[in-house]
Length: 154
Image 1: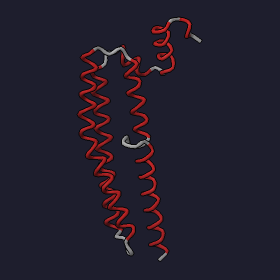
Image 2 (image 1 turned 120 degrees about the vertical axis):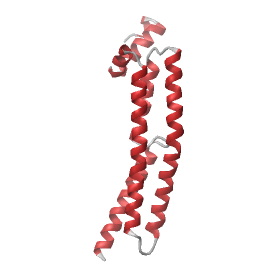
Image 3 (image 1 turned 90 degrees about the vertical axis):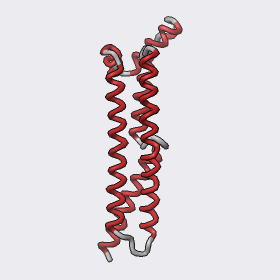
């Protein structure tokens, strides 16, 4: 009885963590989504030529088309886990299998995002790549000064 209770508590913690991460940044997989948004903001600060912009937008579109069904499948697996956990006697092996499937889907999403970053890296010039690695504060200040003049300088 104690063993079943411990397994149940452990699974509830795992499920809670998964949902907290999923809804931390809806539609973007939690912290990774926030990081991805920062990455995209940095891209917007670069002086991209029209061809670069088009290539990057096409890449984003293609990756998002692949990620959306993965996110939906993850949500469905989470629902299956919830349903199994509500059973009088939850099936441990089924829950473990669902957990593995969710992890596999999350890995696919991370690999797609990494492929996208590599694609963007190949599109950027060496100078633009260097700008990507600099802290954003200085670049934003420089852009504001260039656009609006010295009166905005601190």
